[in-house]
Image (cartoon, rainbow, N blue to C red; front, top):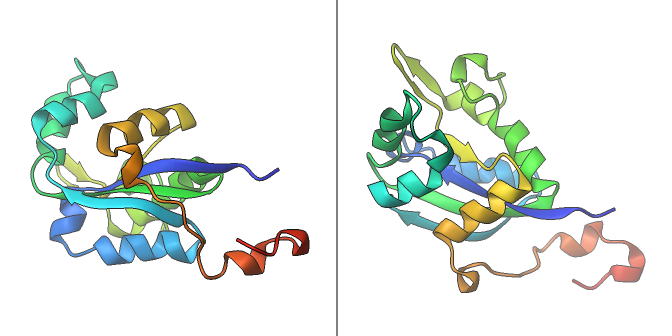
Length: 161
């Protein structure tokens, strides 16, 4: 079965100011995932609170809002087979000290005393992905297209993209 999904990825402020945008995008593309929507924005408090609404009332909520609104971010809609699961595995554990080497957070996340900077957000389920994508993208900002190699990996009977 071909479970093509879409998921939301946010390259967080710490990754943006450290110049890691290209490196992170490159990892997804090298994995064969497709970027079907992307833009740089500065998340305001209202949008941050909508995004992280499930954490409202938790002790770390204000720090999370401050972190995500501190500098610009890059938001992306990433598409591919089992994209939610694949992107989560590539991102690694939320806490960089627990993230395996080779994952994005394992390689680039920082634990600085009482704060962690984990460089990336990745939707945790298909349902979350749908909700989060709708917060950041209008339908007309998400594009359908064929990558150059798409034809190569298709079955012969579906050779055209």
